Amino acid sequence: MATQLQLRKGTKIQNDTFTGAEGELTLVSDTKGLRLHDGHTTGGFEVPVLVEVQRATAENNYTWFRKWSDGWVEMGGQSVTNSGNPTAVNLPVTLTSTLYFVFIQGETGTDGYSNAQWQVMPIATTTSPKSTSKFYAQGSISGYNLKFYWRVEGRWA
Image 1 (tube, rainbow, N blue to C red):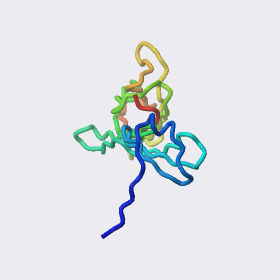
Image 2 (cartoon, rainbow, N blue to C red):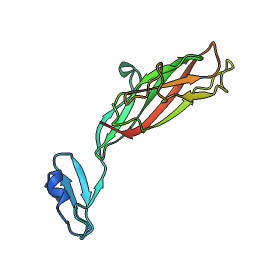
Image 3 (cartoon, rainbow, N blue to C red):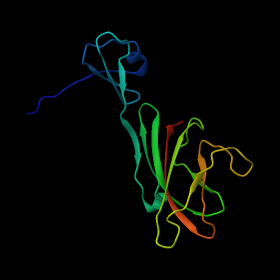
């Protein structure tokens, strides 16, 4: 029979006030997180773990996300915009603030739009307000429907 390893566990509040032995791991029972201890730092150091995942499928419009126990989220997907018009991209996870990172990669094609320039518009205006649940993107070659892939990183609400 295999050897079983049992970790000490407690709530976040209990872990915040605990000083574990050097190299000790503890389980944070209410957030499902882990703490690594060094023998003298109260509360130890949080080791982020995945708490929720969504894979990209046709049913969820090819959006995906990974939520971490420390509050960080990575998410992405694909979308299409008609160049010359901003396209709203709805985020699958609401963020705590508008301070997030947006990455855009336009799909390269053989029909002349492989050199399209992309613009992300998180700036608040009446037509494209800054938001914790969406951002706006626009390609630069008018008359084409342009497919693009996006990725956002920030803190989840």
